[in-house]
Length: 41
Image 1 (cartoon, one colour):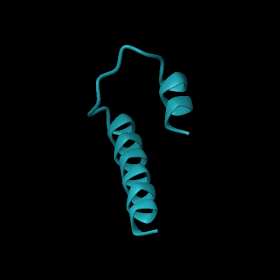
Image 2 (cartoon, rainbow, N blue to C red):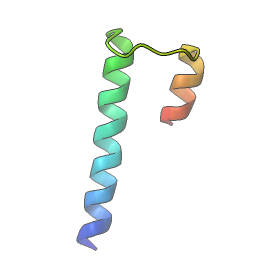
Image 3 (tube, rainbow, N blue to C red):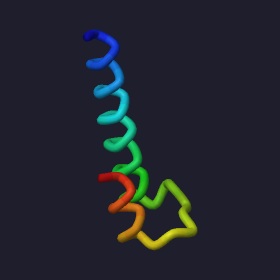
């Protein structure tokens, strides 16, 4: 059970960091922003 919770928290943290990085233009991407948003969901 703890490994499931940890995995879920890791995914949430990744999505949060990726979204913040994209919004602050800290992550350079060759894909369209709309596609990046879709991938994060």
